[in-house]
Image (tube, rainbow, N blue to C red):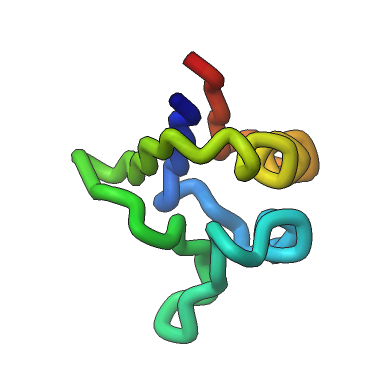
Length: 76
């Protein structure tokens, strides 16, 4: 299972995550911060759990590119 966690309140809106994983991230038109698509909010941490391991590489690249390191990707 792939688990992606986004700490959205610390987002600076650089858009790198969208460039690397556009199927999983998009920028909000309201506040310019990233949104983890299909993520579940729990106290400011948005989490997506997926059994689709094909998303792993793109999301790991998005995590590595994030300058504020607010995206965590785990393969469990």
